[in-house]
Image (cartoon, rainbow over all chains, first blue to last red):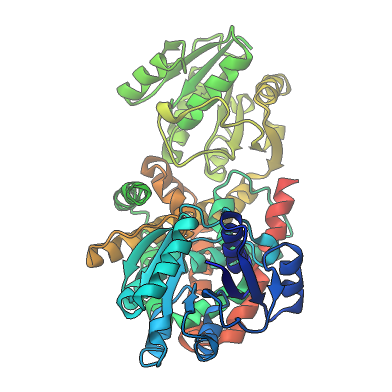
Length: 283
Length: 283
C-alpha cells in the first residue's frame, strides 16, 4: 500500500485518509474535491499529501466519497482512467444502481462496492477525524466480482482501519439501509421541521435539554448535500419504509384520539423489544 | 427540611430522593409504591428510609412521581391527608388537567405543579441515580397560587438539587411538551415498530451500530407504564403535533416519489437551522 487517491474530501473521505496515514506513515494520498475550499482545507489538514485531478497510474486504491447521485458518473470516469493495478472502491450509502451501472463494464473486476456505516451530523474536511471508522461496520457487495489480487489490497486497508466486514447483495443492502438509516434520518428531519414550524407560531424558544428531543432530532443536523441524493437514489425502498412508518403513526394517532389506553400500552410494550435487537447489534 | 414523602419510587421519585439524601444526610424519606417489589427495592437501595402508606403529619414535602393518569386521584387524596405545614409537588409530564382539577380545592395553596425535564429510557427504582436531576430544568406552573412559606421549602429542595427553574402556565407547558418531548417519543416508538415489522419479514438482524438508528430509536425503550398515560392525558396537544408531523412526512414522501431533488435539498437545508435552536437551548 503506497498510494491512494480520494475523490470527495469531506467527513468520510477525510477520515479514511487520516486513519490510513496514521497507520501507514509513508502513504501518499492524492485527492480531489469539486469544492476548491474543501480541497485546500484537506491539504492544510493533512488529509491529502497532494491535490490531483485524477489518480496516478501507480495508485493502489481510489476511494470515491462523493454524494450518492454523483457516484455513477465518477465511478465510470475513474474506471476509464485507471491502470491495471488500481482498485476503485466507492463508499456510497446506496449500492444497487451502482452495481447495475457497471455490471458489464470491461473493468468491473477493478471495482469494489462498499459502505462504511459511520458518520456524524457534521460534514466537510474539517469534520473528519482519524477514529471515525475505528471498529465500525463496512458492508461489501458483490465481492465475487472483484479481482482476487486487488481485493487483497482492500482487505489490507480495511484491516488497518479496524473495520468489521459484512457481506450483502446490493438489493438487500439498500432495503435494509432504507429502514435502519434512511428512515431514521427522514423521521429526524421531519421532527425538526415540525418543531420549527411550531416555534414560528409561538415565538417562544423552549429549553429542550433533557426532553428527549435533542437525541431524536440530532440527525436533522446532517448534510443536505449528502442526504437529498440518498433519498432519491434509494427511492423505492425508502418509500416502502416511509409508507410503513406513516401508517404506524396514523394508527397510533387514531388510538390516542379515541383514548384506547390499554391498546396503546400494549403496543408500546411490544415495541420495547427493540432493546434486545439493539443489544444484539452490539455483539 | 427534615422529612419528605415520595409516592411512586421509580426512576424519577428514586432519583429525587437519592439526590436529596446526599445533600441533607439527616433527611427522613418515607415513601410508597403501588408495586411491592419496587417499594422493597427502594428500601434496599436507600431511596426511602421507611415505607409508609401515607405521609406523616410533620412531612415538609410530598412528591408525587406516579404515571400521569394516576396523579389526579393521588393529588386529591394526598391534599386531603396532609397537615397545614406540608407542600405537595407533583412531577408529572402534563399539567393542565391537574391544575384544573384542584383549582378550587380548599388546600390549593399547599400544591405546586412541577415537571423536571429529566429522564432516561430506563425505569424503576434500580434505574434511579443521584445525578439524574443535576443541572436539569424544572418547570413550575401557577406559582402564584402556592403559599409563600411552603414555596420557600420547595426552592430549598430545588436549589439543593441544582435544578434550573422555569415558569410557564399549564396550557403553554402542555403545548410545548407535546412538540418537544411527547412527539419525539411517539416518533421513536413508531420508528422502532416499523423496523421490527420489517425484521419479521426479513428474518435478518442487521448490525445497526453507527447507522443513526440507535440514537433515533433510543426513546422507544421508554417505559409504557409512564408513556401510554401521557399520550392520552395530553391528547389534544399531541394530536396537533402528530398531525403536523404526519403532514410533513407525507409531503416529503411525495417529493421523494417524484424525485424533486432540488426541493428536497432546500427543505433539508432549512431544517438544518435546528442546530442553532439546539445550541440556544444550551445557553
